[in-house]
Amino acid sequence: MTTDEYAQKGMTLVEVLVALAILGLTVGSVFQLIGQTARFISVSEERLLARIIVDNVMVETLAHHERIEETQTLAELEFGGQQWTYERDFVATGVQGIFRVDVRVRPYNRDQVLAHATTLKAQ
Image (cartoon, rainbow, N blue to C red):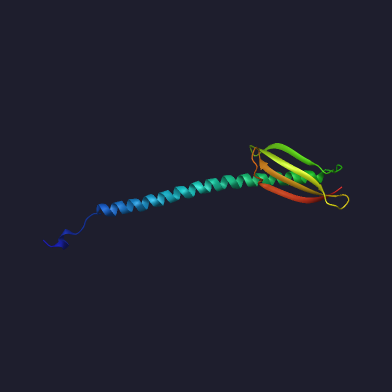
């Protein structure tokens, strides 16, 4: 019998181990990608909710026609099933009757500001 008659009919142990290693790396990469995507979605949702709060606070501020004084307001609210803290500052601009309004929103008990807006408001 010649060697051609003993044609290989299966895979060697080394080939199986290499294939398993490649499969393991691929599956590990897919799981890591899924985890990163889940974290990104969570962070994006938080930032979106903070932007909505900033817009709402700014609209409320611009809609009220009360006398403006140079003040800082710190308030808490619940939105989107989460607790939030926002700061609203009225700062004199140097032009009589014109104030700068700054609004910053952060998750409750955290220091990181997730959304910020600034505008001008006339007295």
